[in-house]
Amino acid sequence: MRRPEPLPPILRSPAFSASAATAAGVSSARLRRSDLVAPFHGARVPCADFDGGFRSRCVAYRAVMLRSQCFSHGTAARIYKLTLPRRLHESSCLHVAALDGRRAPRGDGVVGHKTRLSAEQVRVHDGMRVPDVEEVLCQLAATLTVDELIMAGDSCVRRKNPLTTASRLTAAARVAWNRPGVNTLRAAISQVRADTDSPMETLLRLALIAAGLPEPVVNRPIRVGTGRELHGDLVYAQHRVVVEYDGDHHRTEARQYYGDVDRIWALESAGWRVVRVNRSHLDNGAAVAVARVRAALDERGRNTPL
Image 1 (cartoon, one colour):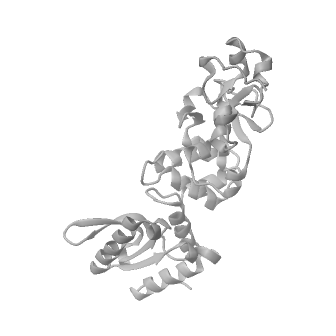
Image 2 (cartoon, one colour; image 1 turned 90 degrees about the vertical axis):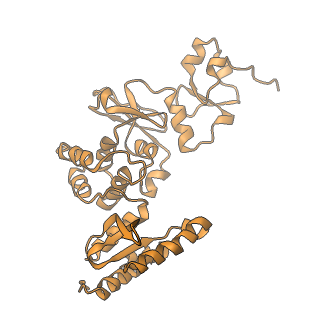
Image 3 (tube, helix red, strand yellow; image 1 turned 135 degrees about the vertical axis):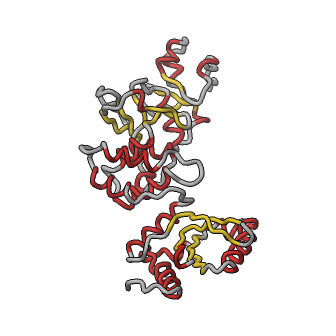
């Protein structure tokens, strides 16, 4: 079989539109050759550059997206890399919003939305047009539970490379009085906490609160030794109890593992009771983690509710 003729240099990118190819002199027959895939109407991607994954589909749709459109809802949240429930990651459809009340986009593999968003509320993040992250969280409120939305919100204001601030999220919730899921949104925003390092820390914090234990402070600085400062994952300062969540990297990365030994020693030497928790302790509503934290607080003189 004769090899397909090379595409013009202007089209040698991960994805392009059929209309751009036609304008560059590419025939319709060439656009139907087997070395190109058409993930969406009017979009073409070289087979070698398309793996069918989320990023590939976003790049493909970007090639045909109008300036009056942007990715939205769960798709925008994934572009921002927010913490989301598995069901949103498993969806094969892309959510695309039309700005300024224009007609919602349609097509196979696309969930279209008609919005009142303006161009000023859209930014480019990781190469993709998306609403401001505060707006994305408001959009998610229509489909997420309170706890799921708290986890997404925590990831917006995480300690490293935060996307926004807690005050901006609160302001967005305040003006979202007529949005779908507004009660869920406001309940969640009131419980979002800045400076988290992982979704598992958030999950653990919510489990402790649900069990009736006091709310710990997230990543509170703890002074040890001669002016040295450490950050505890979840801290009960009054009782000098710190709860540390150990992800798998605490076990598999040598530098992290060796550092943890010295870190725990420093905390305990400074009079802190350290409760270490891993993923296995979060099963069955985090029953084991809750029991260990309750015991530690009781040991330090607090009568916690059963």
